[in-house]
Image (cartoon, rainbow, N blue to C red; front, side, top):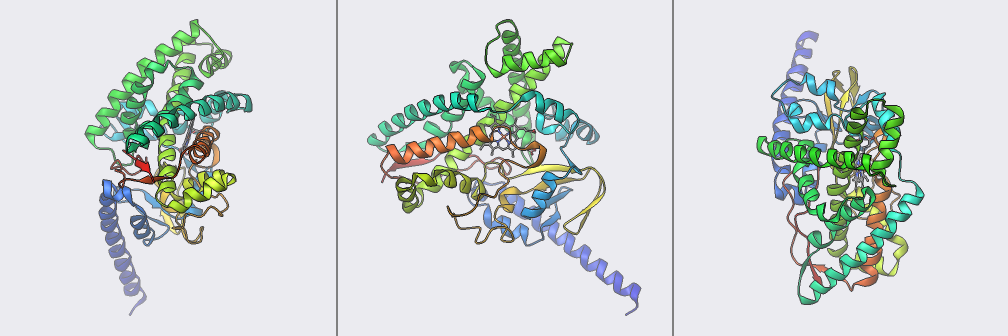
Length: 426
Ligand code: HEM
């Protein structure tokens, strides 16, 4: 065969493979977006990975399932967050220009340097004194929640997700931000609705719910910021107002910047941590020997939390945009193309973790649950503290629990959510 003909044949095969891969990816993603797919996404991830560490996403852009490549993208300055400029480019009528998405484009995980650097610095971090103070609230709240759970368990089964996992994060972040206790259930409901704009493929009705929740949250947090301006305290919102007043002469702009921080901290803290608490407890109760191991070896509590974060993290997808044309995992990527880092799949990449399907407390912590690089999660110490406190108290205070029925999962892809976790005394 002449060289031209040979090359032509190769191109035809590659194109046929690519279109076959795209069709397979469509099928796999529609399975992922069901409650059944969310109950066990891992075989679907294995099928995705069999198309390569990087494969074309059916709707454009790429899917990255290789751990090393996800890690590389997160740490690289050649990959950016989908910021306002990029969202504008996608055009009116796209999900990226829905009101909720435009609002999110002002929050930390949608900013790139130098804006990100400036605002992240102003946000500060969880220092030891703050963590110690919140730690006391977390301990006390966990104790109360487990008493309520125990009471219900003596009468029969109990929904751990509703009684404990949904309550502890909102109590912790509510205490830190000094939010009125009476507002907690409203804020939790709004967060559940708002998250859809951050999902991988939100439907029009989901986006509408997210838009409505975003508008309500804006009104709530703008009122809060104005109130704290006139009644300052020692809470972080008052602290952010002081910080911003020192760097931004325009008071309205300073208030707006503080609003975006407070808004995103709430959104970032609630669903993710609730999912961690529920998934951790699910992994604990589904195998009796795991409960017994942690009860007799409480020093394994931090390893249990880290292995939960690897095995099934609360966030399964993180997205980035290419800052310039490049090649990733042998695939050509154009400037402004999006890569979906499938971290839930990457955590089961056998090239990184031996026997990834084994829940193994002896593993060295190694995961991307809190992202990596400059956007590394600001709340990771708080999330870890909540999970470790809960697990310690759970195995110390209660006899072994058992799973009554398989839980139901919200049918989405990026943000895991257990809708119930029904347990009983073993
Ligand atoms: C288990 C619980 C949590 C998980 C799995 C989680 C996960 C993440 C991930 C994956 C990112 C990075 C997104 C990206 O790279 O684009 C992130 C960023 C962030 N998280 Fe968390 N998070 C958790 C809890 C929290 C809590 C409790 C807070 C606040 C108290 C928080 C505050 C933030 C903030 C402010 C950012 C933005 C950082 C930046 O862009 O510079 N998170 N989180």
